[in-house]
Image (tube, rainbow, N blue to C red; front, side):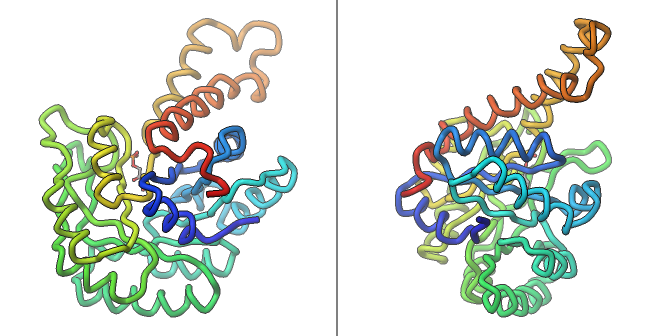
Length: 289
Ligand code: 13P
């Protein structure tokens, strides 16, 4: 059964570990993540971006696939199906389609407008028992070949949005999506500590989990990060393993072109990546925590 992400994140914050959010793109990714979470007895958040939802055919397709697969695989660990960086309308569509959790990313609006829209979504989500993530301080990434350094959120704005009753908060602390540039100064722990000071017990979310050194991940968890989003690292692992398969000429041997064979090395590679991340985040064995 799909569950909202709130409970698992409150437990993570109390237990000083983080739950992994891994973005799905298709059936292979979904299966690899669900199998790994079950093998490791870990809670998991399946993230779906607006673009990935569209790619898979729409949010109803995603809900049908995830729920059906959990029944067939006999998944017992807590799983949240979560919209990643949703628009206001995207959140409404996912709520209607059966997601158990949504993120409203209003970070590109003025803080007033972000607050207003987030306030409306708090009401709608909580009436339906769905958890809500909000964002303050844009988490950048590559734009037109230029990689931004990542904004730092204003702790007072974080408090204003946390006070609306959201369930968890993504605050920019110098993190960015995609690969980090060589001259990236690292996470701003001063910002994280200042945000934590203002928002108290609210679980915090670290986006851009790809490529953040292990010591910084551990320190971020000790300062209140309870959810860590990883996407690019799985994409790189999947692409790398698929490339190796093709370069070794395996697609030309026997029925190596069968998608069930062709996509298997990529799926195995993302399972390894997820396992590595779950070890680092400390969420292994926490399914029934
Ligand atoms: P990465 O692609 O950098 O791992 O970030 C993922 C993310 O934050 C999704 O919201």
